[in-house]
Image (cartoon, rainbow, N blue to C red; front, side, top):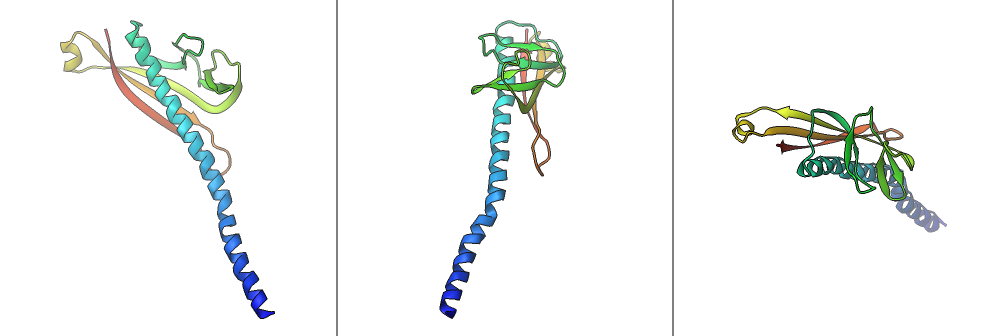
Length: 154
């Protein structure tokens, strides 16, 4: 009988230990999924600005929401906190809120940079920052991530 009790105790310890880690692992996996999505959204914000710049658009300093061009047209537009919606597997801007609201919002900030290099080429150098903010549920704090690049807007 004692041997059976010892065997059951050892078995319970072996099973309950890993099960106690499950809630933490689930929380961490959700957080990492959100962080990866935010990284892609921030990168997409920069890519839209680079695309518009390469297409000959005049980029003016300011804070912008990004329409990533799901309909084939990329655009920057002014507007608030710039929430992002999910339609199927496509993330969209609030300009065409056809999907489900997400926990993400994205703002692209364009600001002028003055230095001798930009002046030497007769160009206007711009600093572009794409910032994505997301609201975590539970015990995790809200987070944000920013990517920065520089472009010459002739």
